[in-house]
Amino acid sequence: MSFKLSKFFIYASVFFVGVVTVSTLFPFIVGKYVWFRSTIGFAVIFFCIGLIQNPQSHYLDRFKKLFKSPIVIAVTAFVSAFLLAGFFGVNPTMSFWSNFERGEGGLQILNFYALFILASTLFSEKKDWDKMFWMMCFTSLIMISYGVGAHLKTIDAPTAEGQAGGAMYQTFQNFIGPSFSDEGFRFQGSIGNPAYVATFLIFSIFYAFNLLISKYKDRLLSFQAISLYVMIALFGVFFVLAATRGAFLGLLAGLFVGLLYLALSKKEWRKYALGTIAVLAIAVGLLFAFKNSEVIQRQSFSRLLDISVTTKTFSDRAIIWKMAWDGFKERPVFGYGPENFINVFDQHFNPKYYQPPEAFGAWFDRAHSLIFDYLAETGIVGFLSFASIFITLFFLFFREVLRKRGEKDEEHTHLSREPKILQAFLLMVIVAYLVQGLVLFDVSTTYLNVFLVLSFCVYLFSGVEKLPSKNK
View 1: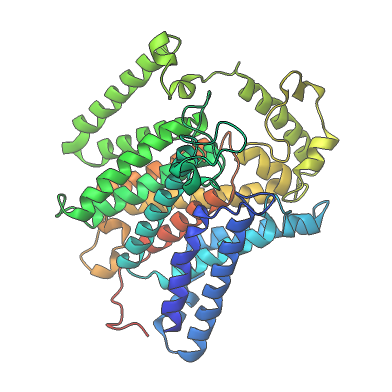
View 2 (view 1 turned 60 degrees about the horizontal axis):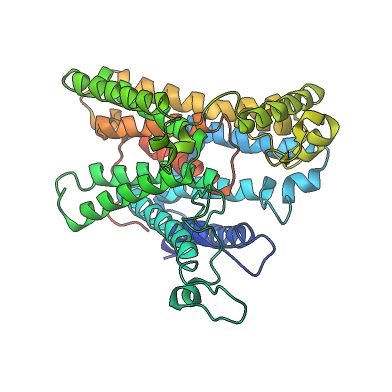
């Protein structure tokens, strides 16, 4: 029973994405980390109670074996380096506790690490992951619904002081967000930042496709399958409405790598995969070629095509990346410490970053790049430990798909039994995350997906085992 309760709280933890607390100073931040830390805390407590009550449980054996996994070792090394960087940084208190506005830091990383370890231990069967992927899809729908509600309240909002507003306004008046008709509209949902909506939805598309192909491939017209079709379409639409160029480039890169993998892995799929790459290349090329036309400029996705090293956003990032690099050179081993980039900004400020009338560009408590953020805040130790996670992941993936199979069942991993197309989707989502991270930094909604996918990979790269008929 305790292990079931621990699983319940793990499933419940992901719904922090839909939490918005209008009563707090930072409504898109505070409620989220309160929900997440509370549910993960309960999950840890019930897991420990379960181990005490059932010392012979197979979960204890899985927990002991877990730290032999290369992925677990790499993630543990990263979390350890993250915490050490905070301890040796310029403000250890800030590094661990963060602040009211961000709610990140060492404490939050420890909670995500707990999620990673618990999921890797308790989710020992594919049905556990199927349920988690459904939870993540529902979370995405809640996130989208919040943003739609924020728009609906503007339809019949009061136009003069003293008016009550219509039914839509009365229903959604506490929802925060822009109207779809606002100039320069970008969808922010319950996350509060369009950039992270787009990244979140890339992972959501992966979860939905995984369910569709692995669980409902023989029931493609079932209610569940049709529901997934609708979800994938919705996720795609709101991905476009978020209009995040980094995520768009990440998705394109991920699709290219995934399709190329399919082309190389199965000869009979080669012409279809390469043909799809060619069609996508032509379509995207045409969009970029005519991006300045009046027809394209009127479309909601036109911002996605405004990609150039001369754009203001790239210029802002280039300036702050130089500050981050200077900060890294000053403290190359452990950096300034997580959550302490503001000190880098102050110490190595470049006046070019302040350009009236827009004043400051990108928000200045982050370097706006996974590479430069980890270099400046966690030094070479933190950056290399972060990179080692994905080096390990790619090594295990290609070692697994390229090696010859024996006849014995125990020589197979769960990944080897996944359809090639799902292996390609796994590559896609990892590459998409890394590419978008070149111009964006991690926040809680991104960490959630990254740690879940890494935990799923622990399952995928584990050997096929015969589980007890009844979990204790």
